[in-house]
Length: 546
Image 1 (cartoon, rainbow, N blue to C red):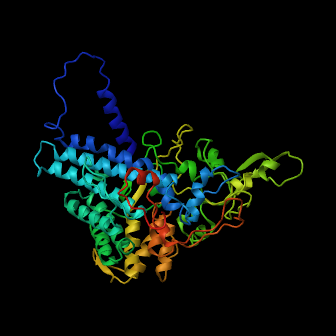
Image 2 (image 1 turned 90 degrees about the vertical axis):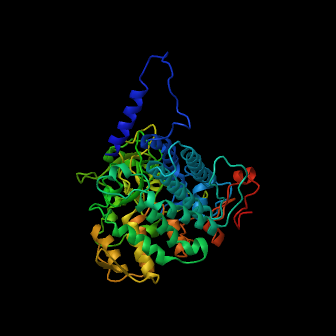
Image 3 (image 1 turned 30 degrees about the vertical axis):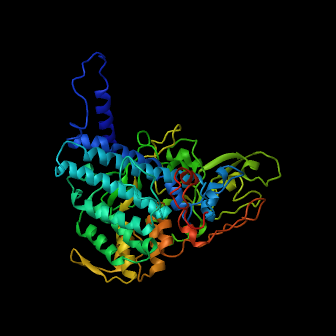
């Protein structure tokens, strides 16, 4: 469905550009007195916001939110995938103000904010009256997107500038995190009533765009982490936002968990509140088929042969997938691998390429590919497991974002849309807030306790129902349900567990490298990049990074 929409847009663009007569007299032009005026005009101007959002959300932003936790890990393999230590720095919380992701994501987020500010100025200067419904809806959409970018930046960097005009007449200074929180809250509340309400009739048109449900979800995220952001808990307000989404009856858990993340997901996903569309050929920025999948299985899944073997999960996180009947268990690849017909998946390989410690005749052997849970560092290089096939297959791999057959060898991009907000998360946020002391509420005639909400999640994936639930169990449930959806760091900070170390056996000291996590509380937020500090002397560096 999403591809039909993309191809329709491309076809219209190509058709409009196909005129070959070059001496046509220009009889009109777009100027501030006549553009934008129609819904199509406004939509055309808004497009760059979504291009900016999709560009780094699934890779660089993902790495900051997930590689810094137990959910994802990229060890080196005899120097491969070290990339100047950026991945081990995430794992060990030793990231600095010169870390490449710290710089790229800051530029991405504030690039999005700047784009929104520029478009807001264009819309404010449009010839239509300020109370024109089309204009008001377009402004609400852009301000909601600006709030989303601001939320991402506040969550990662804490104390950041607030810039709400274009162009900027003076360099902005750093604002306290609680002030940024208040700004986002006010902005979202201010546009909420001008955002569309998702219905069955407009599900395709509103997909990937802010709706009233998206605004409620963003506010729920603000309030769930309000204690970390401002020092004051606001779980009651978080429940109210969750209830607004549930009461709307606009969203429902899909029967298939796998379908929510499949390459052909899109507007038909009933639980999607806000998603970022991707396409292997047309909308770049998503590479789970490349990085999270086990590349050697490419013939089985019909994808290119030049994929990566880089990313897996940690053994202790995989151990959380221990519920009987849970369909989410099948989103991981572990153990000996088989073809779809049940026959062993084998590779013909030199014995020494398979196992570097082998000292016999280096003849061919037929090996059934086996993915092992345990990850063991060699100690010869920093955060490195070695590079024979046994080492390359260390670490459980994921097919939550099922390998996309449209992935090409040239770009290695995937078309699985990424869910930012979805109903499963809303249920679990409400359950957590109740466990933290908010009374259970009745929605749509149903008294929703924390246990009931958790079992709604489990029922969908056919997992053994919980007989009781506490906060530790709730965090584990969030891990099982939401892994690799860019919320783990956010959750661990809220639960006071971001500093929990996940040591990897064999990660012994090597010259110039000290293993182990920096457990300073300052690491809960990232530093302002050196490049930005040089450009703007009014910025104040976050504590612990001077």
